[in-house]
Amino acid sequence: MEQRKNRIAVGGLRKANPNHLTILVEDVLRSPLGQLDPRTLADLVALSEIPTQIPTQLAKQLVSFRERMMREASDLPDGPALADLLRDLAGVAPHAQPRTLRDSIREICADRKHEDVVPAFEALERHWATEEPIEIELPKAPAPEPKRAAAPVKPRRASGGSAKNGAGRPEPVHELLPSAAKPRRRVATSQVNDSRREDWMREDVLSRLENYGSRGLKQEIIVAGTRHRSPYSDLGEGEVLAILRKMKREGRVRFSAGRWMLNK
Image 1 (spheres, rainbow, N blue to C red):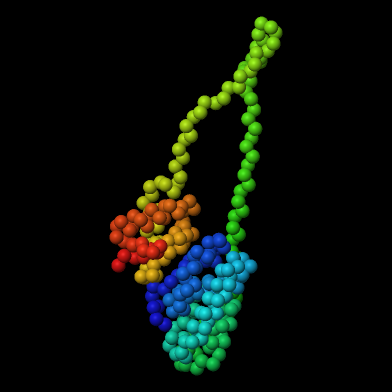
Image 2 (cartoon, one colour; image 1 turned 60 degrees about the vertical axis):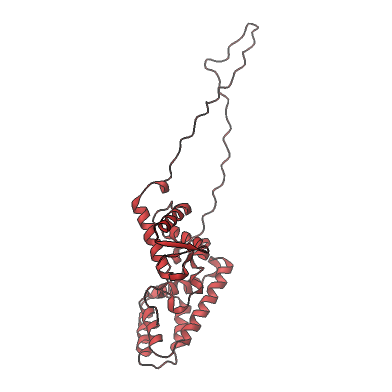
């Protein structure tokens, strides 16, 4: 198969928040079979088997993607190109290769007789036999926290009880309100100048854009993907955009028509 290097790969799909998946795979679902990393292919086909765990529209897109991928695989001639695909799949953990992918490949290879294809398919069958497919169980999106009712403010009494005036009536108690103090400015962890944090974002952005060449990636997709893979739980959208703009000023990347790409 062509373009065996620098294929499009998206990590973490089996653990992604269902609400983020649409953004993560938007461009990948339009890619041809030959440009996809085999692990990403297996992950996307596996996701197509769990329509109840993902948004309805994305579930339909994944089924269409799976059908197109298998048509493209079926159209491969009985020769080295198909054998390469089978060897690629043999490099993916067997438990990560879903049932629909296995069944489709078996159907495609049923009547193939090429001297490269037959042993490659037999080796793939032995690989599959070592482990059964594991069904994906995506994490559930966290429910929004309920708003807490504000605690009632209790009036403060002057110490020593109420004083009486000359007429024997108690003096009115004046509530002592706290003086307006300026709130302390809290600095978020994501705003801390951390060179390792910036280096990680730079490397992630460059490695992803390398796979997409002159097409680049939509801004919302690259931001969402970087935040999803980040080892920093508080990484914000603004921080990723700041790094992208900084890299643009340095001439490393460019921005055009809502997409980021390498500046080659």
